[in-house]
Length: 249
Ligand code: NAP
Image (cartoon, rainbow, N blue to C red; front, side, top):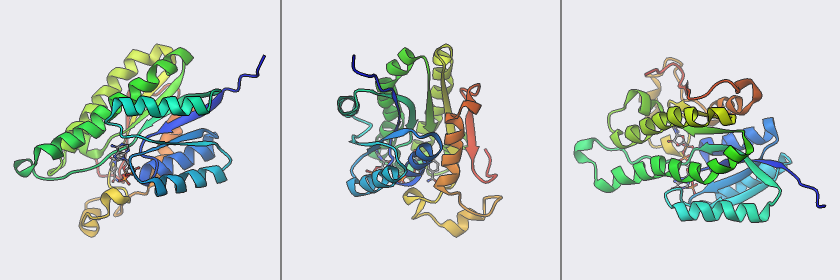
């Protein structure tokens, strides 16, 4: 009989850049997980993340799909499964995201819907595509990237706050649904982190608001995700961990 090779994989959405890329590298380095690198359109950045992962000795699979498109999500995961028949997804990190900031009085419907769609419906599409497998395996970790904005609220981000707040609620409910199956579901809520998402913000003005006086790094967020993946975090579920330099809700 052919040997069954139960390779452990993590699916990280939005792993081409920023926080997702840092999480991919940390999960590979600290947990030797093979990584499914999802992204939307930036193939060069995704390939460069995959090259860095390969240098750490893990396997990678590039999975370009838009998390808004449930059929594309399923097709992307099916493609990975066909290429890696012995693999199993043990960790899902819902990280893909965008902002379309504006005061609500000026907000265009498309900016509301794009942000809700990518964050909240993306969370639904990707999580449902992976969840049955985790339940059958009776174990796994789901980690959702949310935001200070979803806990505290930030003027100019009603769309983003609504989406992230929704994911915090879904994290708590899903955690209760799957706890008996050995699956933990947690959220990580960054404050201001240096990445493409924040590169056009008035950094000097904003960092003055942060008790630590600086933006965080993607690696500082990745470290918390890595902890939540570790056996040490086995009894933590439904929780939101803030990573914000003291800029609290
Ligand atoms: P980023 O540097 O702008 O990277 C965004 C990532 O999401 C990219 O990999 C991008 O892929 C992917 N993406 C965007 N739309 C997608 C879609 N529809 N389908 C699939 N992938 C998509 O952002 P970041 O700063 O790393 O943020 C990562 C997460 O942390 C987000 O959920 C964000 O809301 C959250 N967060 C960030 C901060 C911060 O200060 N940076 C603070 C709080 C929370 P492409 O490269 O192909 O475009």
